[in-house]
Length: 371
Image (cartoon, rainbow, N blue to C red; front, top):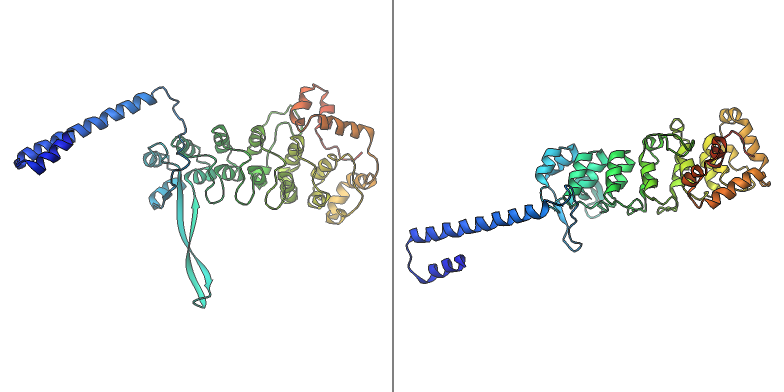
């Protein structure tokens, strides 16, 4: 009202400049008081809310782009104090980080190679999750960053799992990140748990069901309901991906990951995948024991190095002997019990309170022979 009076007076009455300045000051004081009142009201409404409550922007809100190099530097270096100073408002962290790089590409129009600007996108959440900056990640989520946003074709959970950042993975999952979220190329977080770091694990319940071990990203995903049979764009499941790299990192005991996936309900893979793990004796034995019958064929023999074959001769010879033959009744009983567990062997078998040796047998603990 005062603002309208000031405008009317200015246009209608010949007030002096001193009077106009006085009216201007009164208007500014009134606006300042209104702003302070709004801030006090906002603080009162937030007083009884959780300290760190994610605030997601409306779905129809236009995406904001961040091209500021200083902000990029704060995110990539994990400068938590600067990040807190930059992302202060609710919803401010739900932005796309855009970078432009020049790549040497062939230009048909010019007939030569030239530097072509190429834009790439990511998000503050992805940057901090991929580097393990858990405090930065926590603040960004509190300021409205959506854990399930795909930026540049991926979500933050993909990056934290691939980077083997357990604390960031735990934080994202606890704040609603979807453990089955697929990237643009169809990868789920479980598909990415096949790096050297993520293979170097001791998953509790994978070998000795009462073993207390460090919780790793793979176990966090499984505990939060990650699907073990989801396929990527190439048609591979997480178990397929694990089998393909198990001979690359033998020192990381990849058989534990394979065992954990099978005990969480992973379907036995196609026999063509045997060639990928035949040179890894423990993984190969666990895999063969997930079938109630071993199909005929020795197509996998040629991929096993001579020294490994000789060292584990009883295992490989027994695998050839039982091919296309009925399995022992004991093994068939194991298959029946595991089927009754309905993909929950890791939880159901320990609950039976069986003798340790029998429980380990049901959980596919390797023995060095195929019966």
